[in-house]
Length: 174
Image (tube, rainbow, N blue to C red):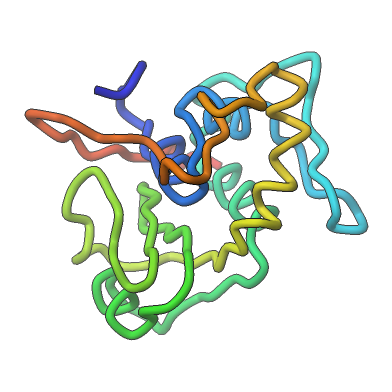
């Protein structure tokens, strides 16, 4: 079972599954993220004030984090579903934003806490895992989470084990 799993946890679960991060580290990335540096080689993050859950689950904030961690952004044709995109793009790692939800596509396979394959895509973020992990390392180091418990790329991410899986939706007010 995931520590602290609640509504809107899909952001942390998707990032964790994509990069092999713990739930806690994934949450810190979303809570403390400010912006990617001007040169694109680092992430600026707040060391003083973390965003509230309502703030860091706003779709606009999730989009900024995904943009900073990605090497390319795609806006598929209207009404392309997650499943269609996964079938057509069977190589590579992507964070996929559908309305109110974030999922992972890894080599054509949708990794999610529920069957979101029929949801229409808002945007797709192609992830270079090594580059994204290097951007996250300073946040992990600052919060004392730069260890195999929280930052383990071999593990493959958060293990989801639910009897009943709830959908998670973002706060759309931003």
